[in-house]
Image 1: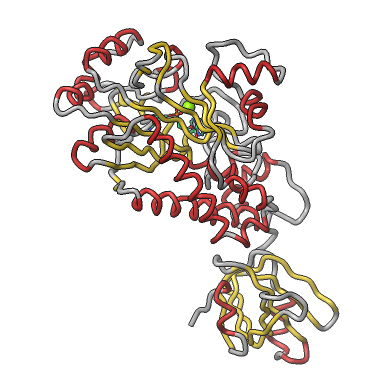
Image 2: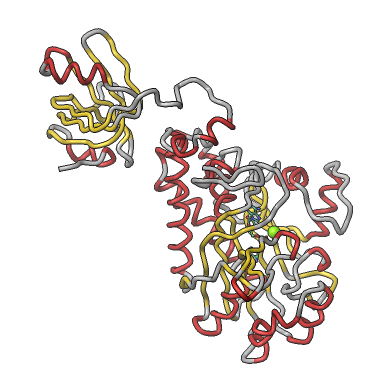
Length: 430
Ligand code: 4AD
Ligand code: MG
């Protein structure tokens, strides 16, 4: 039988078996403390020389970091810490003895750790990040289903661009020329809303981003949500509801992980309150007051996003951007057609842009004009234009970058730690 460390509270006083890996070992004369990881969590097993056989003692003495092991013993409360349990070791077996595990306790540089990403994943912080990434995915699925969205998967090989042609990855595709790796499934789930009303996709997307920043990956996971009969204001309300649900879910389910990562949870708790909302024009004005030299009509850089949110306890929406710097599919504001009915959601604590969203243009003539203006090939978008020819409805949607959300919630500085195997311009391995 295998017991998981996360369930030890229910096994105090019982003899149980844990299967996992040796994370760390300390000894104090005739006592050896084994810190074990079993995937679900961490536990210390205590081996006392005169309470085990000579053979078991010899194996405990010989066991090395990251060896795979099976430990049997009696579960007891930690002598000093509440809600922490220990195992008084009675039996011990090594499945495989690891030699010279390359990641030692000393500090390694990021390049070394990235080269050894396949092993680095076992360290405590990476364990906590992987678990929180999973919790965030769960929270997203939970919230969307509670709001009547269902999951509809979008393709990854696509014939045309969704988010501008400058960041497309082309792949040779048999006799059909080039396929492009999807930048966002948005256009496809726009088609699916006429079938199911509200839906979302959630999967890897690709951007040939030249940006070498702490927030850019070339392959990342995006959740695109799309809803029929939802207009701009309601689109923002859904985004806010989603992000606040993610925060609440992680606070409720990831206490241990947040502690390991030393995330300031008080700050996270405060983010669960009504979000601030600026128009692009207001944001530029505010940035000028704060000393930025951004020009009206420019996209916000990292520094601007940081400056704008530095005193904010809650994420900030920037809505109604100049249409020139936003994609063709965004609906324009009828009260000011120079502006798109869109938003970027900027996180607190230097989290940067979490979400990009908009109401979509449903008028076929305006869309055709915008496709032409952007120099896109109309023929590639005929299927998308059909959605406006047959039962067009007002609709809106948005995309959240999973790793951006993980980075913000965990407080980890670099996005490369927010995905199991990161892909950036300079990294394709392991
Ligand atoms: O703002 P973006 O480009 O929006 C879209 O792709 C829309 N089609 C989404 C939609 O309306 N359905 O990307 C959405 C989010 C960004 O806000 C950011 O969180 C993330 O995707 N993102 C990246 N994350 C990591 N690395 C990159 N290179 C990213 N580019 C965008
Ligand atoms: Mg964006």
